[in-house]
Length: 376
Image (cartoon, rainbow, N blue to C red; front, side, top):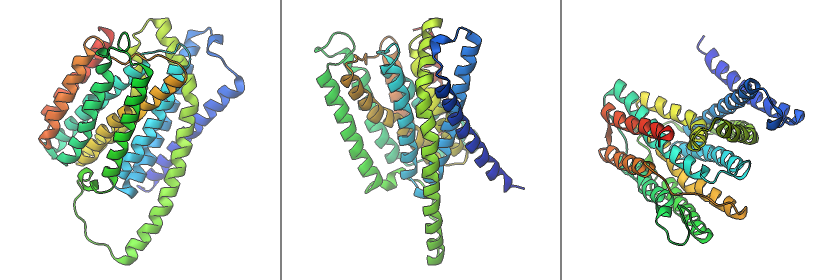
């Protein structure tokens, strides 16, 4: 009886990916343009359908990445998931920022939303869920702080420092500053990945020692692992592709909806970040419930770091090549929210132990961020 559940889950993922491919194919064949639709109900229904299809495909991406995580072990598994989500995030932002209204604040708003969701929303829910079931949980302190050592200075340099530079007016950077900071982020992140996957790999794993397997069992596991890795990689590629292809249509809907409804521009960045981070958030939540807080911490912090170190440099390069000005500096209460989030994350991580009380503080900051989107 229980054997049917894995088959049902696999069928559901295949249907989700096929649905996304089918919707994209239908839109391509029909040649439908957004400005040709006069019925707002039809427009909203189509937008919701595309959003759900992309979200379902992202869940499939997350599942295949988690399968790879089980076979590759930490930190390689989390790295695969992070890079897959980063690719989706970059695709969405490129379409929205460089097309349509060319929203100059989209990068800033999406990066801030990602940091608020990962450092406060995802971490808060994971700590509350894990604390509710297991009271206190532990993780590798040095590995968690290694993430934060990069997230804190890079986020402040990219989101706060542009308000203080003198070479350009307003909260922006000149092209040479963007190129320098973008290249520096990529270099530092590459060095971090090198250390994470080689000599300091143990800092990002908190697994218990297991009994040594026999040579025959190891050989069988190796063959199964190679076939499983290939199957997961193929599924990952097939699930990512329709998300990237549908990003153009979703970007048009977000631009149009914000303009027509008079909604805050920051809401667009939040929607992009939320779309790509929902599956990761659920993965971190499940890991915390399963008493795997190290896995939950890795997912939350690697998502924040990849946005700062990968998404931002790619967007800076793309904007420079297209002559598109970017507004990077935070305004109003957002600088304070960012500083409070980084400070709170440092206090939470430095203890090496988690509880529901810490999670409640992170959730408070996340709710504050949502409130100030609409009442800045």
